[in-house]
Image 1 (cartoon, rainbow over the protein chains, first blue to last red):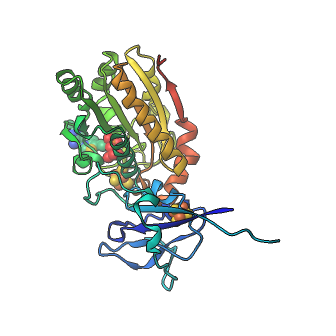
Image 2: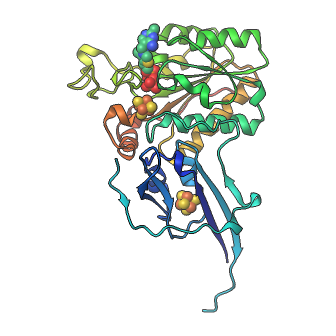
Image 3: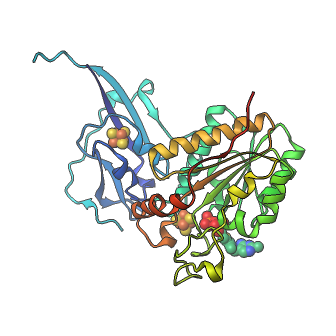
Length: 80
Length: 268
Ligand SMILES: Cc1ncc(C[n+]2csc(CCOP(=O)(O)OP(=O)(O)O)c2C)c(N)n1
Ligand code: SF4
Ligand code: SF4
């Protein structure tokens, strides 16, 4: 079985905290931070979770500030 | 602004080994400048800019594309769209695009216009450019309201929808019916392609981008005017949170402004 592991990089200073990426993420990997950026917005952050690099967050982001990477790793066979 | 924040959230540490160019699946298009956009949080203008520039990037047309910016919230589109841009007076983008395209017929020309710009003050310019079958793309951002001037009723405002000039909701008896200008333009023989799309979900963003790409391809074949309408939100003037405004797009705007191709050319 191959598994996709994703990684997202968010340009937090340009984030306006609109929440669209958090809502779009199928794996609940994103959240809005309790901290604010220099413009005063609660910016989006990646939290622990199984990001699979689907890029839904980046595609919905109106500011185009999310970069997504995806690596396919072959996991070892699990003996049942 | 948002209540869904957590103070003591467990932030993830980036695994640098995954972040290499061969694993890259999405990054900002090169043709979008690095300037932070002035749009309100969650506004669809940013999304529409982004996919338009992704198409220009993917087709390798940055040096061959000329855009016409409107008056409205996207009046500063030329700060973000890193192609040759010309500003037009309110509503006159299609007239300016006509001149540009006729002088430089091999360039790819687009206008980017709101519903106040295209369907109210610019109705004449839009209809006549369409009727002449001018060969450019019109990106029409329909958010059902005048965004920039703080939320007056537009021709596209839904029946019963609130705005500063219809504070009790749009009464069609006295204020007229919402104008489906895309459907009207599709009747004209000079018009090659009319499609209505949205950008409120990732799947819709993908489809809207495909529509813009189609329009560039039809422009190359000089088939006539192409119009890509984007049904979108205006969270600030609708007085909604961004997610709530996208829900309104889904529940109220799209049932009225139904998505899909209204007219498609036969391409050999
Ligand atoms: C000739 C002229 N008339 C009126 C205005 C005022 N004005 C500026 S933007 C605008 C409406 C913009 O609405 P829309 O095209 O829907 O764009 P949005 O701001 O919603 O993106 C109006 C009426 C103007 N700038 N110029
Ligand atoms: S890439 Fe997909 S799974 Fe990963 S954070 Fe973005 S939306 Fe979630
Ligand atoms: S006023 Fe409305 S259309 Fe204008 S930037 Fe804000 S949300 Fe977008």
